[in-house]
Image 1 (cartoon, rainbow, N blue to C red):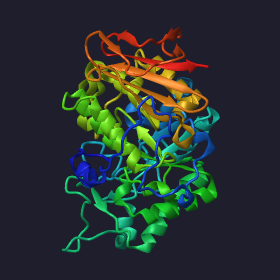
Image 2: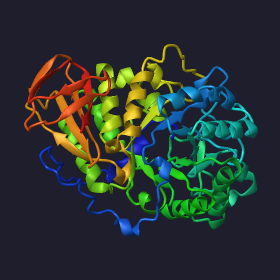
Image 3: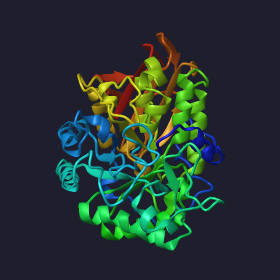
Length: 464
């Protein structure tokens, strides 16, 4: 969404419950399925074949280039393809409301017309060309969909005011008090549901997009999303990402959801408010609540986190690379936000023009390596195809966090030193085999005791 996180986290607080024990590195059993989730036989969602080893990149069109257009962004596609991006998630492409607008340009998430494009970004033909060009580079395109609300001056307020929820005085109203540039839709109205489904189908059938990232999906009835997925899949197999952390949404509607609890946890660790044991705790919740088939999106930042909570240097300091490595390997599908490969060191303005300054692409090779291992090593693939998570304990768990991802074909071993100084530590269990360091390309033999520089990491691939 487009405002601070306080309101959203209040909505989600009741969801973040449950725990089971993590496996240790000497436990070779499979990662346990979620006890309270739907069984596989009840599942409706079939992930597109291409998504099994996909990674995702969020595109902020307004801030990406001086022009802030579809056509200007398209010039970056070869670079993003080379970096290893598979899914391009475009923030909302639709016209932005003017009534009660925030700032000069307004929020992407205050939408006037679901079947038009924001003229600031270009034309429908420009958008069509962007989708076709992305497809020619073997990338998929999903667009942000805001089903919960519209702008105050949306077309529907004139043509279909019955689509909206009214307050006790019979007036339109925001869904949340500080979201005062938008108004709440009424999903008890079947005609609204049909119109929203029609609009979603339009971009898939007429522009060949590959799915949607659905804003505040937890605030819209699940049965609406279930029907939407059924209708969209009848046109072509789509990929659906929910801005939510609700297991129920995975059963029939969504491929992937946000790992919000994890994201908050790593920020707390970086701020010194929690220790590394909090990673174990959040992964316990992850494995309790979600099935292994559920794709989960792990990230260090996105448009909300960057604009409202802080830049990467603000949030993570000298451990930014460590948290990026952790988020790209611990579980699920990694997300990169516009500018992270440049080393984005500012909070992008949300309601104004605030261009990303592309210069030396400081972290492009870093992400290239992380996305390559996600693409090629089956232990890091998404959902049931990926490897189990195995915690590796040391005698220095205050500073060192280590784990493996393991399946019958592959094994990845990640070791991170979150302290500022060189740390020597001993693994509590034997580490066998030969390993390839994916960042420097050298072969390594890992003994029982090792040393690691401060704020650094190893990502090792087992050599069979």
